[in-house]
Image 1 (cartoon, rainbow, N blue to C red):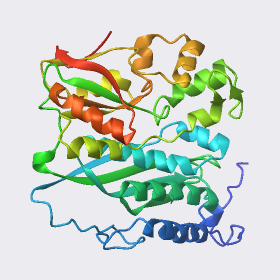
Image 2 (cartoon, rainbow, N blue to C red):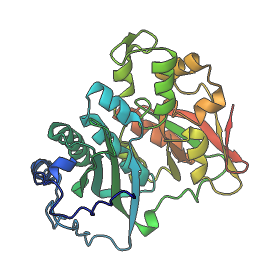
Image 3 (tube, rainbow, N blue to C red):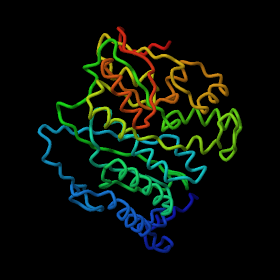
Image 4 (cartoon, helix red, strand yellow):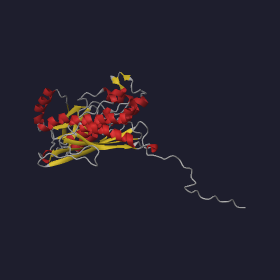
Length: 358
């Protein structure tokens, strides 16, 4: 005899359970609202008279001053990369916000732009208000220091997508420059001098290789003091990405530079050619600036060859400016008086848009 078929379950036959909320799925709206109130308080400290909206609207409103004749908006977006892994390990979260802002500021400032406003995107699995506040505090402090308003952003709760205790961070910046003052590198000429401004460390690039060498190859702990670094490993890696805006303002105000390159991912090898006109190359003199102990130790740990180092890390130079030779002496005098360190690291030569190391 064939088995008797069971009747399909009906909604009334299904065992009822308690009501399910969004919080049961991992998204706590109430906690998110509390975090947004604190973010609002921190962001408002960065506002200028140009900000026409408050945090929480569907879009941030910013009024452009009428002092510009032909204003050009300059924008950039970036992230902090795997430096965040270190932030999770060490429980240090305020510095990565500053890293992000300063990185974005540098990217537009090398084109002559003045920062106007900044927006952030922070996504996490389980919302931890204390962590979020520290990150945003770093963002707000750096925005204030760079004269940019933190006018909005997004804090996303994505349970199951990010592990507990982890988050991702990205930023978007907008600045402005007069059209006739845009710096593109088109006026760079053969014989121009290359000067480099020191970095504080890795800044926000090369962390995947650095973490592999320091933690896997060498077996260091983040809190371990390493004589070769003259510092603890974690502290050496977490140094804040420097903002070069004060330096760049001096360079542009005096009309000293024909091109600038922010040295980020790809190192000098890949970033400097981005501003070179056709028919010109950059000749870099290795040894013309002091390489930080961190980079020397990374080279030793992995027996990393010179080409790999130069296209992975900034190697101690975070900004390169191209200076016409007739302006170099006056520029040197200006920076010497200001106590601003820089190094003459090479020259522009004939060639095809590449870096030549000597």
